[in-house]
Length: 419
Image (cartoon, rainbow, N blue to C red):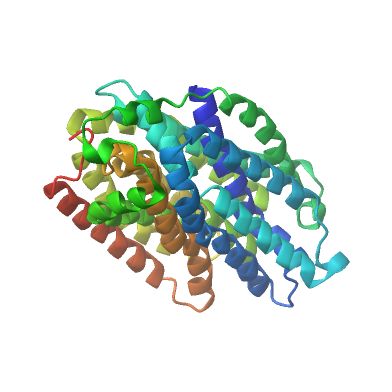
């Protein structure tokens, strides 16, 4: 069960992150321009557009998952990701079909956003139910920390191997397609693994004595129940959104800045990004275990406050230089990884059982689309207009607000697991 649940989470992040890593290389094929930065910004805008489809997908699929079938929604999500990745790997470019290529690429990213809108909510809701009592943080660290990082790591590792294996110029020419092909093929295996997952959450929620923990009889009831805990939903949005600013800055924004604007050696850029991913994979269960030991609220507060100085560390990377890039990616990336190990667990603790999928899915989708989806674009754009300093200020402010709102939600009694 862990392989099916976690494998789908990993593949979602693999397929999603591959586009971000390849943006600088596929950009000229779909958004040709005399200025490579303009071309890359167009590709990153499409990357961000996929995020804005997620809230719609969460609104449609979340109530279905809470009322009817978690497994069915997860199968829809992973199958769609696999198929669309295969299409991107094979589709014609601007040179072949003109602006239609750009439109099709945008449409595929929007479809991926719709399909994955409820993925995080479903996976995390099931994971908290399967977790042994007293070890929810450690188990969520494995499912929503290690497996997420495995997907990010896998995409970076795949990009590294492709970049190292093909001749100079091939990555920009045609080899950018290979990681998309790999993601599509892996999807077939994950669909098989996910077909074996149980519907334990639905069955348990049907017999709950708590009004907010019982399965709702209609979609309208789901939304009414969610409205009753709207402050907790705001906390979920900020808990997730804040860390996603940092996440996409480190896994796509800074690598694209290195590859596109500073024209660093792409093989080394992907190697450094991959090394950062190893740290994230290994640390996730331990950060979750720490949260079980010292209380989730305390662990979250400590880790989120450490994110503030990490944002300002990126100001060191103001020009070409792989040494400084490595320093920023490793030191700042460790703090980002610690927060990524914890944020899903914290989000899940804020929602009642019967609307947990919808609440986490909607909060996740809004947080990722508003904050994460715009992160890499903002970073590269602000650097291009010599206002790079604005980005860490923005990230730090949202991080501090997320702590304040979460602590208030806890004071109001919305933390339902682990505290």
